[in-house]
Amino acid sequence: MASREIYEQTFDEDGQQTDQNTCPECSGRVTTNVHETVCEDCGLVIDDEQIDHGPEWREFDDDRTGKRRTGSPNTVARHDRGIGTEIGWDRDSNGRQLDYSTRRRLSRLRREHRRAKVGSKADNNRIAGFVDIRRIISALGLSRSVRDQACQLFRTAQDEGLLCGRSIEAMASACVYAVCRLNEQPRTFDDIATVSKLGAERIRHCYGVLNRELDLPVPLAGPTHYLPQIASELDAHSETERRARELLERADDRRVANGKKPMGAAAGALYLAGRTTGEYFDQDSVADAAGVSTVTVRERYRDLEDVPCA
Image (cartoon, rainbow, N blue to C red; front, side, top):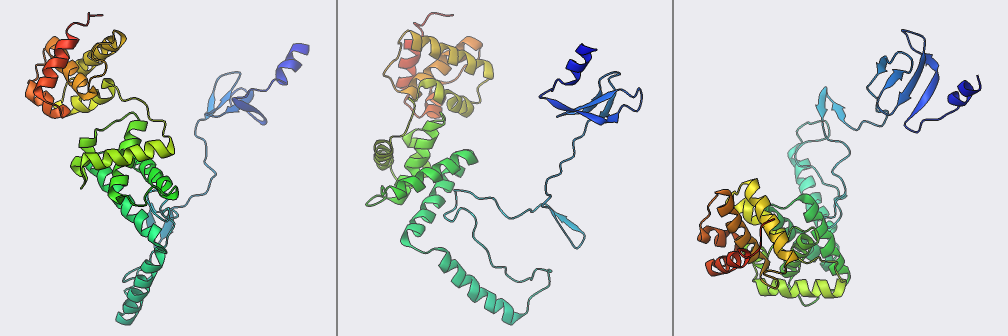
């Protein structure tokens, strides 16, 4: 009897005991956890769907269901963080067509509203920088998370006064490069310059300013970080990429090709791994995918040939 009382007082962190409900089959004790409601005696699953009692923001207007909730979420990719309002065009809230005079009045209000949204030169510069960042991110096929981080870094650089005397697009390009390095998805300066309107040297200079003034925790970009990008360009098999990664890791342990260009080492490893798996790549195609010369690919894969197999 004492053990039964102790057992009944025990609390399970994963669920809670419901003394009010009993099992409809055996009248046993029912326990509700985070996933389902079950009977402890016979094991009957009484309920396995939890009801979400939170608010539902979907709109039901004129018998039409929409997926719009309370407007777009806040985002750092907009100069006003996405909380600005917009004035409609030619229909009212009930969907009725507006007359000509009302449309003219809304047009004037929209123009003044657009001017009022940008209150200073700093806002203009921020808008221009965010537009460049979104364009570069889209051209490189990067994720939305990288875009938001790059916009936040640009915002921080502007607040610290790093834009004074420097090109907005160069600083935006440098922010994208820095965030790619921080997320261990590095792109070369030439990759950024290809989709930017500036040269690689100006982007490298602005990145140096960001790294020095903001003390960015940028990790070293090794050959393995560039390997997925080159493998994707060559449409290489996953086995070839895995062999190339293992080869680069063994080469790093033995200090082979240290101090060399990471893209060249990654290209040489992928070329050598392709010969091992029977997926033969042309040296010119590997060099084009890595953005290096054919001589670099040849020298790096010859260095990696001396690495013993695992």
